[in-house]
Amino acid sequence: MLFCVDIVTTSSEISSFLPKFSTVFQNRWLLLAILALTWGTSFILIKKSVEVFTPYQVGALRVTLAGLVLLPLGIKALPKAGKRTLFWAAVTGALGNFFPMFLFPMAEVKVSSAIAGVLNSLVPIFVLLFSFMLYGIRSSNKQIGGAVLGFVGANVLMYFSGGSTATENYMYGLLIILATAMYALSGIFIKKHLTHIPSLQLSGIVFTLWLGPAVLILLLSGFSTDFHGSPEQWTALGYVSILGLVGTATAMILFYKLIQMTSAVFASSVTYLMPVVAVFWGVLAGEEFSFWFLLGGILILGGVYLIREK
Image 1 (spheres, one colour):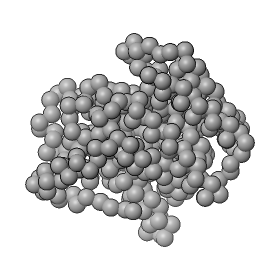
Image 2 (tube, helix red, strand yellow):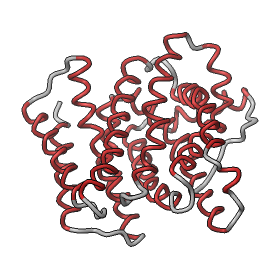
Image 3 (cartoon, rainbow, N blue to C red):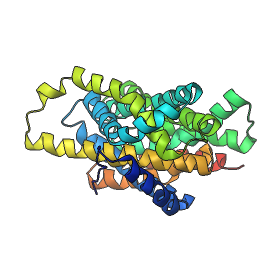
Image 4 (cartoon, rainbow, N blue to C red):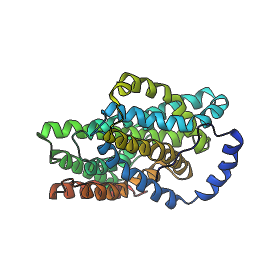
């Protein structure tokens, strides 16, 4: 269901909403389920959107819509944030909310939505790797084996993903893997440096900081001249609106909250459930589902399961 927050929401209305939001969404499993359903659906919406708009237009529209919705929160929170907070908000925003919004549409020009959803499951594996590389957090042999198994599954999935050549498959699949690595870094940095900011305020700051670049890219992409108001364009704009308002603005508020309530690893375990939703929509849309697809997905999820050991 598509919904939006009035951009002229007053400060008092926002303030009155915060306690209600905090009370309702205190259950980490509820947050996990909502995120899985929301983000799992986003891959088919991206696929449908790039059939009409360019990947740059899809990414810029998604960030712009989310930024406009969260702008009132950002305007209120920015003056209160210190330089260190703004720095890490900008970094995590770039890694988790800006560049991946372009990488996924670029990849899904060739890669199916279901494969994109399964490859996205690599996020916890990258959390494990970066936690060791940046902070020296050691892993067990079982976790290392899980990481290797996950990457083997990703290679199987990319090699047999249905593109015209294996090289093409890898090229577009690597865009998704790059995005998942960025997601992992963003989650780690949020947990390390930004747990002191309520999730609503953090979302407002992040998207306000990146709203300008998104609008600039949208203008340079030729969207204003390409959009003629055809039925196909209006439908695709509806898909992107759901992506921006629900799959980005609302979902990131919940994701930030989940990271702050738990850990980057627990929050990234949403990737257990997302592939199920993504594959469901992909099959429903008539996308190819082969033995190699199943094998690659099982290897990735098996690897993620192994690294969940504390």
